[in-house]
Image (cartoon, rainbow, N blue to C red):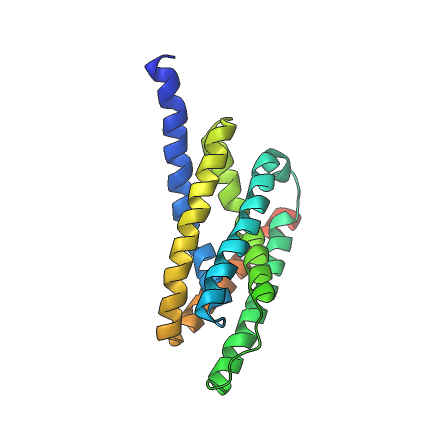
Length: 196
């Protein structure tokens, strides 16, 4: 194997990991918000299992990436799904603000579902960018997505701890999620109808 033949997959892997890290910030915020109402032990499990499900979804999306580009309205539907997740997060934040001494009745499964749904709706641009950067190297694609999800899990754990210590940051995080959802809806609308 020549140096050039070895360099191409390594360069593609570097691009995949870099893109995944840059685009995963919003996702990490949603994951952190989703687990902040759980006990610390459950937070770790929700992050691990939720991101495992999200990684599986990302992998399937990555293999279908080129076909997904042709689906008109997918971005709009993803924005609506993310807006629904934001609504659920808002209700939890409001309940904690009204009665902070009462622990919300959030379950591990509810947090994992929020993580998987939010990642599904938000990771389309990420998956398409990563699939393009992988340049047809499937091993690079899988490895890059795995590293990105691992980095997002670490960032989400840190964000969850920070949100627990500084609850007012949760509202900023929620505003960020709503902004991303509305942006996706507007871009999806333009994609469908060609105007706003």
